[in-house]
Length: 421
Image (cartoon, rainbow, N blue to C red):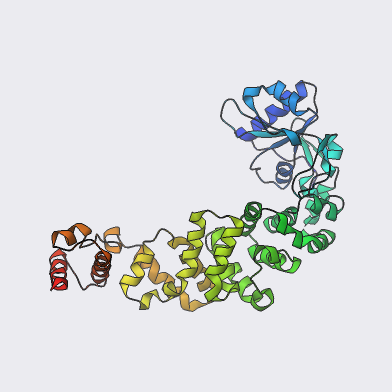
């Protein structure tokens, strides 16, 4: 890979990040872009955000930019957030060069010592994330051979992999995610360390694990990532209920097929559970994962709906319309339908069903989801008292309407009259 300085895209975010560096430099401090933004620039990608590393202490950063333009969200670890007073760009994290003490909780350092750029680089996680960039001189500063590993297309821990993992157990999942995202390999010593420490991932909070799982499943290599979770031992912590040896091939096949569908981590996770867990156990495992990984109610219901109704959807063309129609107008349909579509890429017998469903979803709304012929007010008007049988009557009337047995209001009223006789 060429070491020619990368081109910096001119965006509000990059311009503000350059301004932050300029102000720190003009005040006599060292300041550089650091971490993932440097990696992305070298790879020719537009960074999502820009982080600045500096010799200025947190107090000096706040004094320079002003209390109203800064947030001391991570001051104890040397991090100050600098706000764009114009509101045109996202905030920039400014972190003081530092070295870290022990990580007793496997997540955060017990203490930090402010240091130099070289020392700061060596306390970071992976070489490809350990480079600096001077946006004023366009110089890459690489103390950890990150450029070399980008050229070799490997994810390698900085220094001793065991030490980096001991500092933050989540780095094991992050290593897999970066490799899956960029199509890189896991360097052998780093992978060996992950295998040795995989069980210790269990001390990491479910919320942090969930974020990594979701981001990984949205990469272009979800099948490779899941297979790596399994062979490294990480799967035992993420979804221990899967017997990988028994389900590996069909699961990888379905995950690969999902690449032709929506890039939705919920689809990929539903596919993992659909192929990897016995049907009668899928919902129980999903509920267990929900408790451990703290998903939102919306995400949980989308995956539950996909698993719960997969069998009905795959036979939709053979079912009474009154059973199928409620699924097709349900807000949670997209993930379920994408799962069926992924399955159709493997087994052609589901392609006609997906097409059949798609045709009906293209119907005008009044045809796909017509107004009910009978309402609760109608039942009351015709002498029915609210109670347990009330909803049953409405449900039966709706089913008969959808199946074509009640064609208009008059027919529905006549049917209702007969129900009272």
